[in-house]
Image (cartoon, rainbow, N blue to C red; front, side, top):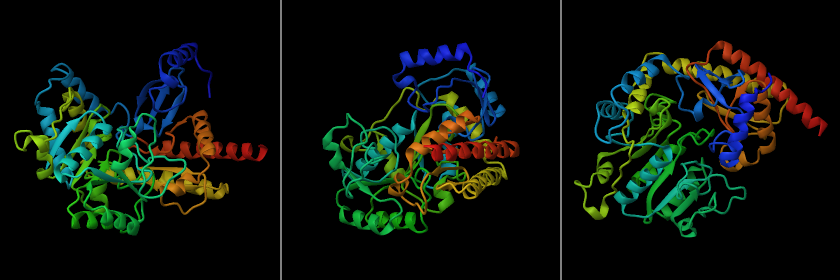
Length: 431
């Protein structure tokens, strides 16, 4: 790729000085993005990348979608935030209720981490139990409760929780129970064993890049329903991506509560908890005894800028053929990538679905976190760097596909993936 400009070099140096690790905590690449249009982004040096990072997923329509930017521009002159009810926020909540199977009511917040945190809190308040069961390898944001056994390098015995970060009080380890993803029998046994202590069960219905095995979600739903334990789907990633009603519509399994984010804000900070009315009423202090209420407020709850962006995004997604187009593009890219791996005899497995997938440098089959953990992490990191050098921007372990990506993007991306895989193989042979 072309030379890095002095201006970009200087800004990278400033970032190293003023930001821990030189980043905002996300993608570690030392490039500075100047703008995005459709399915591509351009850095300050004028280099253009096919963007499969998509802001870590929110930009399902692509960057600077004209209908989204027009809606935001129209709202800007009317005011940017009010900390009270406003028309766009109410209309967006109604759209979510209409779309999402489990949603009777919605409570907005600003981040996915807030949404999963408050989903667990309101479930515990409703159930009047403290413990939450999650699945190993599942990511539910940055709260102390969520950051348990998300990425343990030395997984322990189930259901023992392992903190993923320093700074988590040790006492919380006993409040989270861990089960293996995609093992219906083990999950059922653990839930049955701890049914009297569980306030909730939380899972990503599509965990990172792992699809649920047939019957797994149904088994978890059955045992939680049997014991009236609230089931939370973390749909921060999958909401409005797999189908208009999210993964719960796509897989035909309805939870009691879900956490939503990314796409519903159209690229702006917005997230939500949505769920059954009898659970959601615990957010309403006037409808619940004070000892069981879960007050929640946020300066930017229902922010009108984010809400109009979300409404414009959902309007596009409702149109006939939208998801067929997304899956057609994603499947072409994914299957082409799988063919490259086979043809080049790379010891790797492509995991995921049309809207998001990635490669694990290990032989399959892989269906849970411990299978993914067997992958060569150093090879994946190097592959990501080689992709960047070839003009492909992707996350550490996800390739997101957007509606803005077209046949040209897919063809060029497969050519660039081929170059990156070939270089990776040659470097490995030379090691």
